[in-house]
Amino acid sequence: MTLLGTGDAGGTPRHGCRCAACRTLVRSPARAFVEAGAHRVPIDAGAAWPDGAIDAVLLTHFHFDHVARLVPMQFGVGERIPVYAPDDPERRALLFEPESLLDFRPADESFAIGEIQVTPLPLRHSAPTVGWHLWHRGQSLAYLADTRGLPEQTRAFLVDAPPDLLILDCTWPPDPDARNHNDLDLALHDIEEIGPRRAILTHISHELDMWRLESGDTLPDGVQWGRDDLALTLV
Image (cartoon, rainbow, N blue to C red; front, top):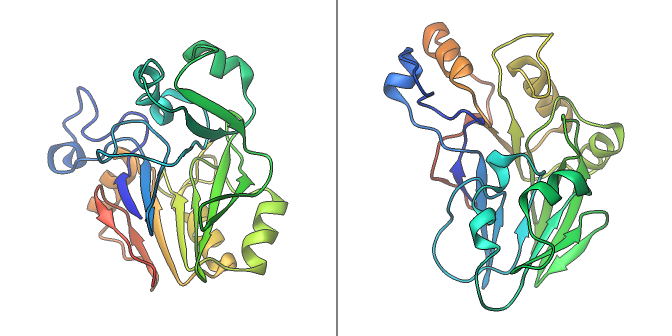
């Protein structure tokens, strides 16, 4: 997996901002790209992914920073591309034509992309949203963005079989009143409870980057800040 982007909707640098984070860091919309054997699968599509054929697209939800790349792509030519996404007909209708290159399919049960076993996991957000659990040849990862905490069925699924790699929303500095996305305290709490072998924080706002630059904080063992173009290998 490559984390192509690790930022929130506004990105870093944020338009018009001159904070320390925006002067020194770059984060594009949160998204990832999975390669397993001959299979290539983007997770979310807020911006471009590497050139070449893809097997399918996994969408977490229909907010524009997660689907923008698909809007012009729907008018392309060639074989239709499966796009697995949660049920959100109103938002989908605002962005996509009924007939296009994109073959939208429901994210309501497990399925396979070649040798990759894929399971959608419900999340808590301001729109219908799922995370994605992928299993391939004995290795597993979970990509969970955007979310504020976890629904009980998702938590139970992950605690029962902790993934080797967990990519988790962490948008805000510590703030118990944060909305729609995890703050750092909640993200670390969920990571500790799930117990993955390795965890990466993503969907990071410039507010969180500014906070960590000022605080000089450290993360628990096995947890790290995501960065754009971070390549992660499971073997």
